[in-house]
Image 1 (spheres, rainbow, N blue to C red):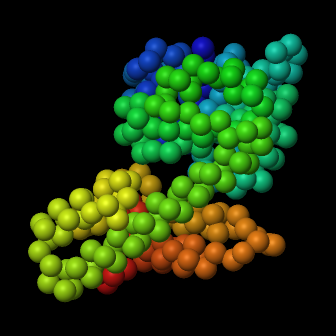
Image 2 (image 1 turned 45 degrees about the vertical axis):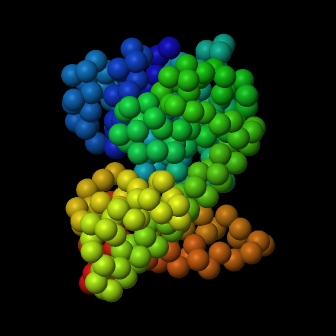
Length: 286
């Protein structure tokens, strides 16, 4: 199975590296050329446009920054599949976008051959095959990329025919993660202010059942202040804005989601926009 990966950000590079390790032929594209040098050295082929990368592929994986970028790249794929009895490749968007954007991408995709496939997990988890994927779309299109789901990811959850539903679940997951990190930062700051020993505080937070396992990976960062990572405070604010908007305009307001969104947006505005989400603790240190 030939795969194209469009977008050489952290997650796009991680997926490409994993696919190459598994023996998939991979073609890559990035808006800014030259981001895929180490992957080309590993065997990837770099294309000059999205259409060039997708032509001849069985599956196309999008890994892009936001809703606007995904729509733009999908529009550039429109010519793929013309004259091809199969309709061309299945396009799978792994980006985190609004549910309505996923539905619009399905309508833009060549032959409607589209699935939403947001990822749960870090870039190291993707490289190591430990990440999860949520997939929404027509079952036939999903099954056409079966080898990708079974080999690239540790687990696969089918969320139904509506691609937007996969994004609903992804945004709910991210809301839990971001709010958990924000509260963990306050707990760490409160413990220090009260004179708690850092080593004991770290040990207890790792063992308390009230601390979700997903927060363990960020505990050293929150306490130590390194803030190197892949999920930035800017992306966190964007995802929280999308999560808070899930119930609008007619559903219940989500005031906690809006509050946590403002915390990450403020961290980004104060110079931590490219730092990992643990940098939300800097608002408390300041």
